[in-house]
Amino acid sequence: MARARIGVIGGTGLYEIEGMTDVKEVKVQTPFGEPSDAIVVGTLEGTNIAFLPRHGRGHRISPTELPARANIYALKSLGVEWIIAINSCGSFKEELKPRDLVIPDQIIDRTRGRINSFFGKGIVVHVPFAEPFCAVLSGVLFDSAKAVGAKVHRGGTFIAMEGPQFSTKAESRLYKSWGADIIGMTVLPEAKLAREAEICYATLACVTDYDSWHESLDPVRIEDILAILAENVGRAKSIIRLAAGRIPKERTCECASALSTAIVTAPDLIPAEVRKDLGLLIGKYVR
Image (cartoon, rainbow, N blue to C red; front, side, top):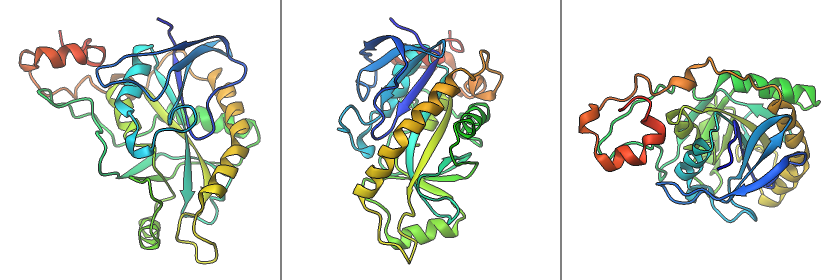
């Protein structure tokens, strides 16, 4: 099977990356079902890279229905160690304007109906998640975005909401009062699952609107969001191409060993089926 060191999870309108060579499509089966779509594997800036359209080609899958476990597991099975996630978001700050890019460093989880862990069913695991995004990868994305001339902001808190509806005004004002910076529907459970899979994960979030709090503006409309996202697709591709060549060859961050002290269950008590399904994740710790 094709291998890749870097994974890209593309958001709305971002289904491929020009400049990839030796391209092939890979269909991966996982214990958690099929990923959102076939994964495109190729070479970009001298590095093997795997590209997965989050919502499927043609945007077929709602944020609330994404097969996040299958997506992360599939990328892990290809050898991915770094995931660049592309997300759209609303802004709670005047200075974070539509078309700006944000690389957040914190998350508040407001999702409700999503499975957010690979574990359970006989194995208990508690990974550290105080710093939900990889600082190393976030730094690479920030520097790459600046290098291509994008207006980009480093740091900030991302509200991960359930969706698929947008916020009410009351919700939007509440989140703003918390000091949150941006809001979107797709960072979680991806970030949690990536940490459990010991994959470095960071997001490049495109601001498309001011959510529902801004009194002087009309409520957010999907046609406006799609128009801004279409404008940003080319810029996101440029940032990914540059970042691919700047990602370190070796990982020294804590993401790479997140499970080393996180598995609580005694190895001899882990059910055989669970051990088999999760061998890709726990195999180096549970013999």
